[in-house]
Image (cartoon, rainbow, N blue to C red):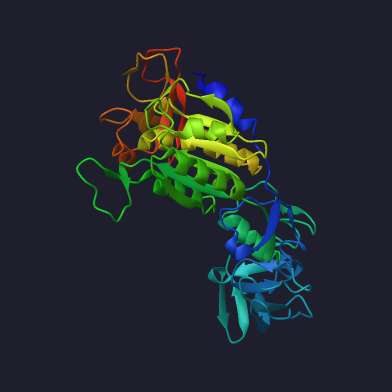
Length: 401
């Protein structure tokens, strides 16, 4: 067996790019940006009014004027109106372009309008107030979103603002999720007393769809010839195969032997961790990768988030992936010489600290606990007693804040 760190290093060393493609910006949510987005013009593109009210020349106010004749009204999108002397003003709306002959906006709350004249209350007025000046945010050709960012609603907003209808994004790998085992039946089937429904494939599929990866699904019976034939086909058609089950030491765990026969090089088999110890990883000469997770649902779920997702983020050049740490909320004892990935539920206390509380249940294999927890806390193999208040890394699989 190898350590968690060794397994991580081996997997991340196999990162690879899958190219780029253009997609419409409305369909780009969850993809990784492969180009910098530039401003096509200054932001804002004109001196923009930020309050409903009147626009005037500050010099008039500064010279003692408090009553201003309203020359006209200007809405957002209108051509700017102009004043011809310091005693005039323009009634103006939020978002409108500030007329060149004015430089200051007084909001409606600070004026009274009667008979076409705006009277300013006894207030302090600063030149240029309530104006968002042209180019204050960004200049033309400034970068507003960098390549490597995960495209979220803010990137979509920027793309729309600068007229970037087509975005260059990183291509996702073509993935197939393969389950094995005669004890597994489909979701809509009624299992016998000694069978279970296939859940791992759908769990992994749902997690990958958050990255806009839409994997194929395949189930194989415990038949060595069928396994070899179908895996050979998968290696031809997909970049990544994620296997679930069939990698332990049982009589019907045919996958390691089948992969060897198909000339897939084993890079490691078994990791010093709980859950997920039987994890197998390898690749063939064409660079196709095989992540063979244990069949235990929690083990597969852990391996996906601890190993596959970091590999995927690295392969896609994602810039925003960050390590997350939390404070252990209770004393924990774990005596096996393995790295323990403990299911935890995180909460933020009044001091702003992220606290991780161990799940109460039947250990690391308790699938139901995944509903009530949101992360795995990685407890190192070098220790057996983990003290409340100590900080450890966590691997979130739901929102933690």
